[in-house]
Image 1 (cartoon, rainbow, N blue to C red):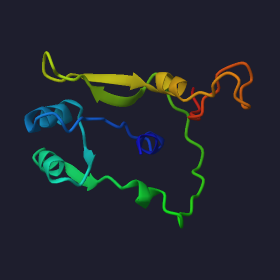
Image 2: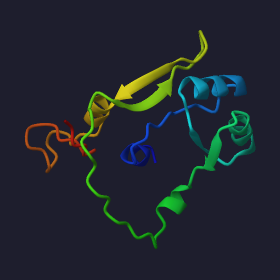
Image 3: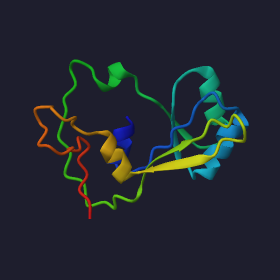
Image 4: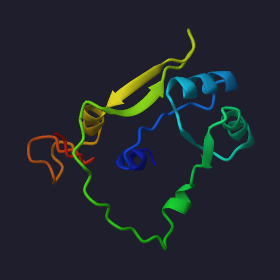
Length: 134
């Protein structure tokens, strides 16, 4: 789901539902969130609804990957700035209130690499998250 959001041109913001309602609302405002995908449990849904943002229920694994699913290839991505933000996440907030942190596309692309010795390895790390960059 996270890579799909990135592929669609949006920035996913990963928020732990363990935060208080007030902390979640603060993080959503601080991160300029426009849409929230949430689990369908009552506690999490209540916290998200309190934010006043549009909410969608996160699809389940079975909904995304049913045996009958037909997949179509997506068109190539446009060129992107590899220094742009890929993901927003937050600190635990154990000492202070949770604070925002970002991960750039260049860093994310390095997480999804073919390990050395893999048949696709050509002595360099190849990104499995194909992003054309400028």
